Image (cartoon, rainbow, N blue to C red; front, side):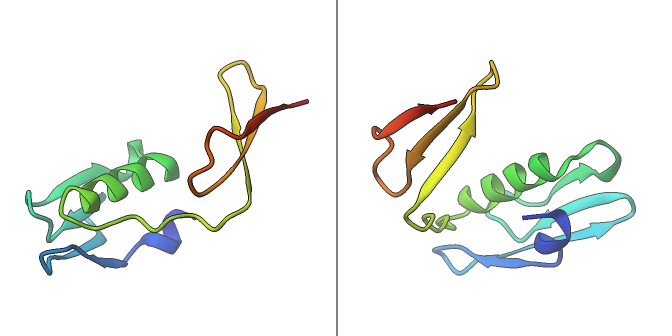
Length: 98
């Protein structure tokens, strides 16, 4: 998911809080959460960093991240190897992929 796909999006937490993600004056602005406003500089924020902060901001206010669809997922290790595993509760079923 790219930055453009999550910008101007809203999420609702368990307690009815509606959190929003917008751009204001060179910053990504997360607002409406239980702990107040959170900002990140656009110049110093990658897609991955924004996604991680947005998910964390929302989860801290009661939003529950949807589970991925069942299927094979791949993650890279620090050495560059690819590990594959089945999603949804089967993290123990992984294998090395060459």
